[in-house]
Length: 184
Image (cartoon, rainbow, N blue to C red; front, side, top):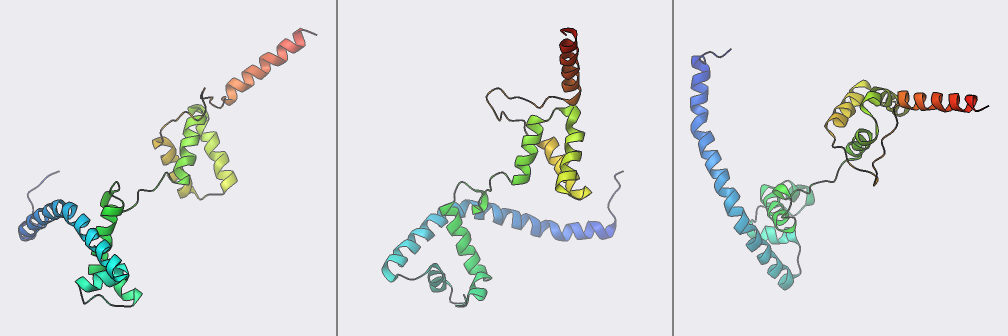
């Protein structure tokens, strides 16, 4: 159901619109500028460090004298955080915003293995066994179930064996038992 916004909401949106547009434009310009500035910043740090032998924090303090000398102070200072961000952009350019992209988590790996090896008919049984063994809470099992559903199936071995479903295993066992009794 869509209705016209109330006067109060319309006024609130109107006050936000100009600032939002300005911030959007500023961030767009910043994202272009940082690509060029970060390497120059780190080159200057490299030269400064070679000549002075001092730390990265001292370099940032040379650029902004308000950066405190104590670790608690400088780690929370905006200028130091900006410098660290620029450093990450240069040292880890393949990652978004300079933060390291982590590998697959153990939980995602477990979900991928379950998805790749357990037949869909036996998934509920397998998950109940996992819950029993791990003693996870229901909410954790639900998260795991969602991860299993989203996981890609991958070939873990060259011939990609899948676990045999209980029904197929029971049918084979019954056939084997019958053939062994028939031969006697």
